[in-house]
Each structure stands twice: as C-alpha cells, then as structure tokens.
Image 1 (tube, each protein chain N blue to C red):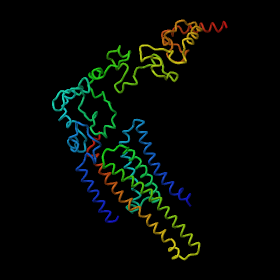
Image 2 (spheres, one colour):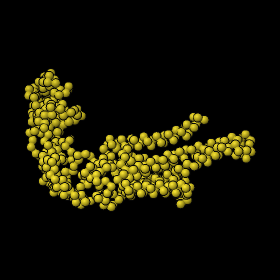
Image 3 (cartoon, chains in turn brown, green):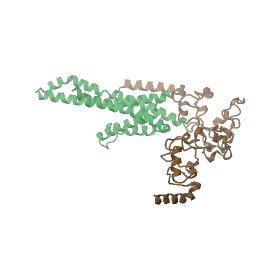
Image 4 (tube, rainbow over the protein chains, first blue to last red):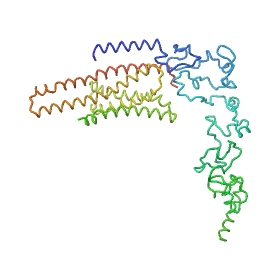
Length: 251
Length: 192
C-alpha cells in the first residue's frame, strides 16, 4: 500500500476514533434516548456498566420501585399514570431491561405493549382487571374475573377457549366469528348466517328424518358432519336411524 | 463484440450486485413479515464470521500459509464475502441509528463492489490482451511489434490492476470501523 494512502487512512481513522469518544451517542449509540433521559444522551456509563449491559441497580437509583406508577423520580405525584394500578411493586424480581429499552433503535426490536406476565407475583397474575379493562361486548359484560378460563397471559387473541367442545371449526367452518355470533354476542349463535344453511333447507331435511325439534343445532350437531349426531340427543340417534331405515325399507 | 461484452462482463456484474440488493431487501422484508426482526439483530455474527472466512484466500495469496488450491480459495473468498455481506446488510437493515456502523456498512459495500469490479475487469482485460496478442502474431508481426501494438491495451490492463488500490485500503477502513462497532456492542450491550 502506498505510504501516502497509509498516512491518510491512519489520520481518517484517528479522527473517527476521536469523534467516537466526543460524540458517543451519535457515533455508536443505537438511537435517541427517551425524552425523560435526554440529559444522559452523551453519558453512556450513567446507565451502562462495561461489558455487562444495564444493571437494574443503576435504574433504581432514580426510579424507586416502591414509587413507580405513583410518584415521579422527583417525588411529585403522577397526575395521569399509565396503568390504573401500580404493579412494579408486585414484580417477582428487579429486571428493568426485561421490559424497558431507552434507545429508539433497540425499542424497535420489542413489540409495543408486550408485557411478560410471568414477571408478576402469582397472586397479582390473577387480578387481570386491576390493569386491563373488561371488554364491552355482551358476552364479556356478563363475566367478572376468571379470564384464564378462556384466555392465556401470552396474548388475548386467539382465546384458549375450546370451541371444538361445542362445535368443531373445521375447513367448512373457517368463517369470521360474527357469521355465527351476530354483533359479537357469544352467548347466542345462528347457523343461518351463511348461504349453506337456510331455515327452509334445514326444516325440510329434518322433517324428512322425522325430527321436529331443530332450533338448537349444536344440541345434536358438534361438527360439519350431519350424520355425526352427538350432544344430548345422541342417545336418540339409534331411534332416528331406525326410523330412517324403516322408511327406506317401506320405499 | 457488444453482445460479448454485455454477456461476459456487464451482465454478471449487474446480476451479482443486483442479486445482493434484491436478496437484502427480500431478507429484510421477510424478517419483518414473519415477525423475526430479532434474527436480523444477530445476523451480523455469521456475516462477520463468513467475511473472516473469506480472508483465507487473501492470506494464502500473501503466502501466510501454503495449504489449499488458490483457485478454490478464490471461489470461496467470493462466495463467503458475498454471503457475509448479505447477512451484514440485512443486519444493518434500513434503520439509521449510529454513524460508526453505517460507515462500516458503506466501507463494506465499496469493498464488495470493488471486489466484483476488480474480478470482472481484470478477467476482461486479460482476455482482451491475450486476444490482441494472438491476433497480431497471426498477422506475422515480430514480438517487439506485437508489444508495440498492444501498448495501450497493456496500459489499460495496468490501470485495471489498480483496483486493488481501492479494494485493500477500503478493506482496512472496513475492518477498523467494524471492530469499533463490535467493541462498542461488547462494551455496552448485556448479553443475557
């Protein structure tokens, strides 16, 4: 390599090295800090410990766990807290970085609004409504607590409620919830929400089989197979089949 | 001649450089689409290792060791450098956070392009020179006359070999800036 090129290279790299130490937040910092930490922008080691990241012990110097959600770091009462109930006092351990990241570039790798509920103490984990609003649809309005019966703490949707227990959502029933549960009223359902099932068709087919009670479909049908009769009338299945067989013999 | 130039030189270069750009955008798109953006965060590690692996050829060429077929090592150098650059480009994404890693990325880009241009232009110049020499020899020209006839081609060939003047210094810049980025990551990031 040409000696002049070598010198030019060395000078340029030395300038860059100086810039790294003078403007670390611009040269190596992964994006701006949150507004509240702006004054720490150029003081990396205010939060970072060499080679070990950001220890929570440094966060709690300013952010006292007992005050989080109640008081600011200067001791003022928080006028509009982000959550209705302070919960940092009910965490299993102090691991601030498990949820928080201050640099804009690092926040990008976190899903907004994600919170690992496993970090909460076991008793607090059950008190969903302390932090979450109850959904306002007709089904959820009737329910108080016990969310884990139908939902897990990883994500609200899809619910862990076992629909197959009532009706199997096979490939013939991949429609949207409102097709069967009009106005998102999960306390009711209708099988007439699609073109396949019309009141006239259903009536004719059941009357042909000698079945007169067919208002509550899932009482007998738990999947798309119309011959797979289950539910409360399963015991009558033999009777229906007997009738059908007799009619076929008569024909 | 025009078809040959296009097919043998311009097209391969365009394809290689274009493929790198398309693969980077596709990789970035799919990582976002599949909610796997965090994977991009770690792609810098295999990318760096591949680029370090590609240096086998450079060390062999400078006789730091004698094992291995130089031609195979050159192919390995091109493949590893291309794939490593792809990983690093996906790792960089389109997010502008800090200046140092972006300077390193730009240096790497210039390095890759100078490598591809060097490879294609050298090959092109060498073949052109050889063809011209054979052509003049067939016409019965003496050796000094042939050398006289291909003088400007020889000058051009020499100019082509100058690509190393870009490739090597920019590689040094790339290494230093990358090391700065890597050291800063180790210094500030908590590996847990």
